Amino acid sequence: MSVLDRLLGRDLHSLAAPYALDALEGEEKRRFERHLKGCHRCAEEVRALTEDAVRLAWSTAAAPPAALRDRVLTAVRLTPQEQSARDLTRVRAAHQPTRARAPRLRPLFAPLATATAAAALVVAALFAVQVTQARDQLDQERAQAREIAHVLAAPDARATGERDQSGRGIGVVASASERRAVVTLSGLGTPSGGRVHQLWLMRPNENPRSLGLFDGDTPLVADGLDPNSTSLAVTVEPHGGSQQPTTSPVVQLALETVGFGE
Amino acid sequence: MEADELLVLVAGGDQKAFEELYGLVSGPVFGLVRRVVRDPAQSEEVSQEVLLELWRSAPRFDPGRGSALSWILTLAHRRAVDRVRSARAATEREQREGQRNHRPAFDQVAEEVEAGLEREWVRRCLDRLTALQRQSVTLAYYDGYTYREVAERLSLPLGTVKTRMRDGLTRLRDCLGGVA
Image (cartoon, rainbow over all chains, first blue to last red; front, side, top):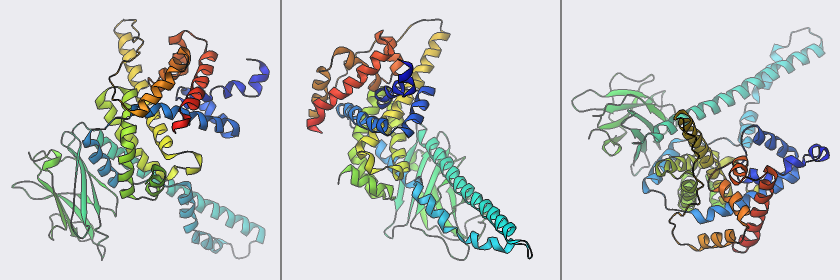
């Protein structure tokens, strides 16, 4: 490898095939990925070689265990998707009114230039808040996805769900050994008048125990489930929730098939 | 519907489309992961992660940059390789702790495989590569070794392995291109 080759990045270029085979790691891989961003020709080559490598996968297809399908499809109902870069831009655009508020902070007799600079600073600060919020939301979604993945990864994780004719449903992925479940609602909408959907654990000869309040479509992670729990129920309760259910359940789900109450 | 059309619907949050896509890709994903990871329980776990990640990150798929199936299998391969490398690192740690200097045997796996037209094609095309091209490509792709590890196992200079990998892949393209 000559000095000229190095300067022209030819040594990096020769890593295209190992990269396409996922045979690079660590710093070498990161260096090559940085190089790829600025090298159109390498990106093209990696793309072609990756398509070639994928051909090797043709010979390996095998029928997955049937239980995998249920788990994945239930998990999908529980898992929010990543926002594409385009969507994030749209979220920020929707928050434009913040810009209109900025001029109010302009001091009454300040020279125009200063006022503009101040306004610009405020806009910049508000924009930073928007970005942070978007990132917080993303972090929250990631944390949630991790939580769900954690329950799913338990060796005894099982999924079940129920949906009535009007499309109101409840889905759950639960692990009896972890005593944990991820629960999601569908088709229930948001109760009117500030009321909330509250999740209850039903056990034989005991009062229902609150597992928490739903926040819109967000899945609820329930901890500390007793092995003898028989079912989950959702009721509509006043703002802030209740000690005990005050209305009859809108949806209910037996937990027997997911390893509880057996 | 084809995987490419389905993936675009999935990117828009369509769960029905995901069910259909699952039917098309779960076999290839599971098979590839199992080929690399070997252990059945771990293979199922990794496949589950991959298929869930497929749902989550579908909005990032760019149809202009390649086919859906190749995007999905690339994702599956990357996760499978990550798993097998960390498992291997753990095994090697245990072996070092056990004061043994034992390296896993060169595994030219004679795995029992179902017959299939595509399988047969790939096998035939792999047979047309030179031994070094074939070993360089398969040790990396099917066994998850880095090109440095491949070089060490085959006692070849790094540069040679890089070249064999490239030539091997290009020859596969020529051979398999007709049935794409």
